[in-house]
Amino acid sequence: MAGLLAFLFGGSAAVRAAGLSFIFPGAGIFYSLPPFPGWSWDLVWWLTQIPAGLLVVYASLQWGLRRILARGDYLALPAILASSAVVAAILAAVHAGHAGHTGHAMQTWTSVVAVVLAAGIPVALTGREWGRARAARARGDERAAVLASAAAAGAPPGPSGDTHTQPVPLPATPWALERPDAHTLADEQDRLRVAAWAETLALQPPGSWNGFGGFADEYLLPAMRYRIWALAVSLSFLHYSHTPAYAGYRQEAIKSLIIRYTDRQVWQYWMKENRWGMLSNNPDPIGTPKNIMFTGYLLLALSMYARATGDNETFNQPGALKFQWSPDTEFSYSHADIAQRVAANFEQSDMCLWDCEPGLTFPFCNSVALAGLQMWDSLMGSGRARTIAPVFLRRLREEFTAPDGDIITLQASRFGMSARAARGLTNTAQIAALLSPFDTGLEWRTWQLLVAEELESGRYRRPGPGSPTPTDADWGTGEGNKANALAWMMFLARQRGEDGWYRSLREAAGEFETPEALQPFGVSVHATGVLGLGMVGREDAWGAMVAGPAQPSVSGPRLAEAPHPDVAVATAVSRGKAHDTVLYPGRASGRYSLGFDRLTPGGRYIVSGAVNPSVTANVSGRATVEVDLTGRTLLRLRPV
Image 1: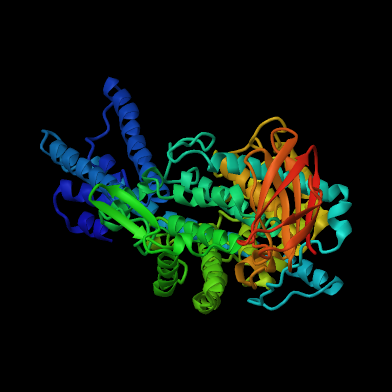
Image 2: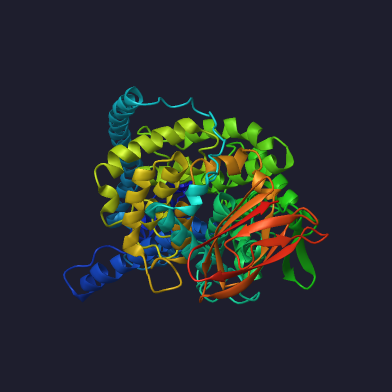
């Protein structure tokens, strides 16, 4: 509107040219040109150089838009628009002063074209969106029929917002561990491969990043913070689901991954994003109403560590996590501080969901943060997430869900726009999986549609990404493979106890396997981590971890020490005063010493699977057991 007013009432050619540039970028440059030359070499210059100049303008505009989406930079695009207007004004002023040029009478057609385009393009885009909305509503009607048939054929869904958080227990009968079937053995091997890779990377000395990849792009999805997160959550989920009665190097590995978040290389990107998007030079990555892409992910990693290990002390000490910006500037936070910041940002946001980059809101990132907050509430007995969740889910349905039921990838609040074309069922599945403890209705609907559209059709086996959204591709490489989609479908299948479909999905993921390499899959570190997350769970484990009661295994006998990487721990559970552990040799067969704690002081235990048939705990409730490992070994402790 300002550009139109400047063009209509600006008077001079320079002001009118500048106004046209704001109506339609590049139009002012055309307007400012001298009249078309006759048929001469000047015409050749006109027909080549001027379009080239316009291409520069539009390439710059595209770059400015990418800067917003990639780095939250809201300064570049206005600077480009202003520069285009200034160039047009200068050209108009220069040409207007040349003899024989009379106010560019022959170029006034550009003003008509610019106004038509400025009005016509929004109208065309609006029409396109109406068409897409009609198609989405028709797709939604088709899906409603599929869901109605599924509900009639089996158990109907729970109401939206209904929760289910009771875990299915680990194997309790002797034969379940003594005589495992082929699927159990395959699952153990998957857990061991994921754990060996993640623990090897995690237990490197601080400052060593071998196997993680570089720090080439810390703004977009390849960023190191997402790789650390994928490793940390897959290890924590494995630990919670299968080895809760084990401390040792796995616990140390998860702890080490969380500490890696404090490396300045991981979080220094926020200084520039905060400057470009918020006009602030504060580099603090936590104390901000934005940056859920760091704070929310770190909260879930912290909460999963505490839930999986029972250690709610290490990171809950004041200043446990120190973010050192310079010798004179440090930002210190505890697990509690980060949880309170996340809760406050949810509560203070008009949309409830809050931003990654300034002005860009991603439902997936917000789902990560909400799960982390609920886990924190479960640890502490607080209830902020339960207050936030109903508002969150309502906003998700009203503002981020298309008429066909798919959840869109992002909303650009400063432009009043939603990326509704960037969505798909497998992208929705990621969010439904994370939110399943809060909304079993969303989980049920998403799974039924996955069965109908992806699984029964065999589409999950076809090459290419799961959906046309960046968050459904390989985050580390941007490659359009199905690793991410398969990972979250496996996660949902595990959560729901759909073992048949899980086996089919796991077989499809075998396309990416690298049997001879340390890294289990030949995709990015992030994609390998989320594939691990999809493989290491068990039925209802996610719901229990997010919002359920503490597992009894965290209070019984515990395998506290095992040499790394010589001994690989696939299962470690306690029931009352009894303990079961499934071990494999790590690098080579041999005799190894294992340390147990939380035993009855002075108590005697019968041990099966060890060198000696019994052991007596010392006055501290600790004991050492030797074991000969040549293959899968079931070690059992039973009190006498």
